[in-house]
Structures are given as C-alpha cells and as structure tokens.
Image 1 (spheres, chains in turn purple, green):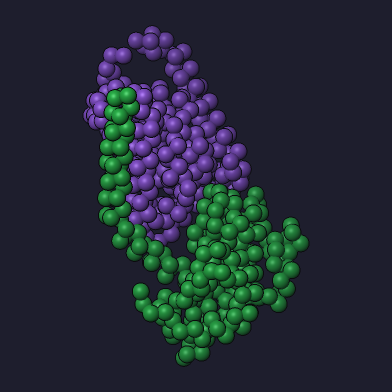
Image 2 (cartoon, rainbow over the protein chains, first blue to last red):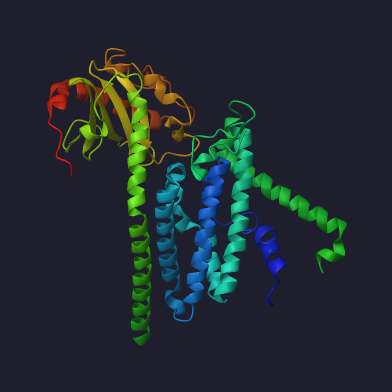
Length: 219
Length: 208
C-alpha cells in the first residue's frame, strides 16, 4: 500500500471506506442512538476522540507489543479511553450523558475502533495514525449525524432539538416543523431503514459517478 | 517461556499506564461531576415542589432510610422533607424501580402530607432511547398524569397501566418502563401511608 495523499485519505474515511456505510462497523451504537441529531453528534464526537486517542496510543506502543497479546492490549487501551470519555461527558455534558446512557460505555465494543488499531495504527507512525483516527472517526460521526437528522425529522418533526444538551443553557426545541411525527422512524426498525437508505443512496451516487466519468474514476 | 514473561510484563505495564490515565481523569473531573449531580438534583426536585407553599430548605432536610425497607429499590432510599412554619407539607422520595427494562430507574416521587402525589420525575435511567425514555419529563408529559393522584384515587389495584387493567396511560412501544415506575409510585405511597409520622418527626442527620 503506497502512502495515499492527504485528500485521498479524507475521501477514503468520509466516503470510499466509510466505517459505517462501507465497512459496516460499529452498527450497534449507530443504530441505537441516532434517534436525534444531538445524540448522533454527541456519540459521533465521543467515538472520534476515542478513535484518535486509541490510534495514537496503539501506534506509540506498537514496537513493544508482541503479536500474541496485541488484542488484549487494544481492548485495555480502548476501555480505559472510553472510561475517561465517560467521566469527561459526565463532567461537562451531563444532560447528553444522561441521554446517551449506556452507549457511551459501549463505545468499547465499537469494532470500528479495534479494527483501525489492528489494520492501521499497529503498522503506521503516530501522526499518520492520529490522522487516520480523525478521518475514520469523522466519517463515522458524519453518518451518525446524517441518520440522526433524518430520523429526527421524520420521527419527531423537528431539526436539531435539544442542542442545549451539548451547548448548555435552557432547553432548546430546535426547528419544529410539526408536532410529533412518524414514530417508526425513531423506533429500532427506523434505524435499519435509515441506514439501508443511506447505503443505497451512496451506491446510487457511486454508480452515477462511474457512469458519467468512467476514466477518471479509475485514474 | 521468556516470551510469556515478556508478554506478561508488557501487559502489566500497559495496564498500569491505562489505570493511571483513568485515575488522572477521575481526579480531574470528580469535583465537577459531583457539582453537576448536586445542581441536577436541585433542579430535578422542582417538578415535585411546584404549587407547594413551604419555607424550609429542601436539600438540607434530607434523611436516608437504610435497607431493608418497604420502599422500591434495595439500596438506601433518600427522603427530603418539606415544611411550612414547622408543619409538614410534603415528602420527596428518591427511590429505585428495580424492574425497568435496562437496570434500575431512579425516580423522584413527591407526596404531600395528605398522601397525594405532588409530582413525579425520572432522575436516572438506562431505558431504550426513543421508547422507554419518554418517561423523562423533557421528552413527554407522561409523568404528569400522576399529579394529584393518591391511593384513594385510584385504589391500589388501579395503579397499573390500562393494558393491565389499571387507570394510567402506557407508552406506545414501552410497557415495562411505565409498569416499573407506576409500581414504584404505588409502593412509595403505601410506605408513606404507613410511616408518615416517623418520616416527618425524624431528626435530620448531622451534615457529613
């Protein structure tokens, strides 16, 4: 694998190899918390921070870690980082922490994180691993936000409600279009439908693009 | 052999490093987390206090009832007493409904001196987002249906969701959570009825 350029790395993380859309990793939190935009944003940012930090630590310690014990060490590092993030959320965003509930500690089980540790951070430099964590985490967070936005719009009829959980201050209702919505969208099946729609949309766009510029898509 | 020792040592070193990281974060945030919980508590007691006339400090009047007790939950229950000119007005119970969908649900139940509910507020829960979490006052007005109700209105057997033959609304897609909360309120009211005198006459504990 030759080192891809900066722009290509971003394109990979956000689109071509998006952890949620293409690698289909970390679906448990993705499906569970995205009932509103603010939840998606909160968990997305938490996952992004954990991913960057775990990539950095795994990469920094990669020379001392024997291959036989690498997985327990990854788990140890990730679990500690997630505990730290949980404490930080409790201290600075208590309302959001209450809203996300168990899914903050469950970031530990997000396979996208251990996958990046194994596939990327254990073989690359610290700086490069942090960048990888950033682009992959951003790709995951963007998907969480997009699905959160969509489900909230359909399910609650509002856009970006309760941003106060992140920003502080009084309860904000966001942009309310209708009172109440199609409940299915915020129930678990709605999460699956939304993800399926997002993947389908990505495939359609990819196909269109390939059809319109066949040569450039292949370099 | 040496590779096992080497692996063990590496693992131990990284474990120590990680523990240090968590300990550091804990020390840095512990104070803020506690302040948040206190602020949250004071704010969250408000729903059970609205419409009451009182002149006593609420958070200072706390007593804890150690287990075993007949209140919901297996840990110590917390009671805040509210007085007006030294006459009891209401008692606010913080209890845990143990039979929620995902772990205990901490509920605040306000009961006035005559045994009517002054307000119910869910303090802490791990219920499913979008389903059980609508018992939160910020997300729906489900908990408001208990205001003013007592063991006479309806009788103890009516303290159930409509699907179970009771008098209270359920939540679409979630019946475990409402069941748990209604049961917790009913048990709190029963406890209050049996222990009213001692709740209000107990001297408050020395400050920690």
